[in-house]
Image (cartoon, helix red, strand yellow):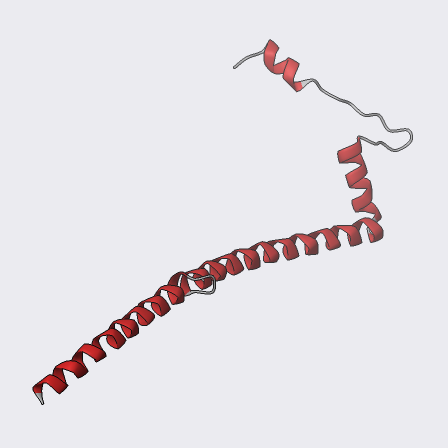
Length: 109
């Protein structure tokens, strides 16, 4: 009877080691594999970053839509932009430009 139990335990041991090895491999691939938990966490961080970038782009697009609307509809705004960015003046107006840089160099504080 004792020899039967010993023979059963000897046969049982390789199966137990194989089970442990399979369990360890399964755990390894669960955490470190291509579709593992660590990869999933990395993808979640990337998704959050992309959503943040997307939100900023949507806000910028909305501002640009508003500016386009103002440029098409608001003649005063269009005139203001033309004067400020392009230096345009109305017919008969005089534009005075001062050299502030030269003034600072002549009279330092």
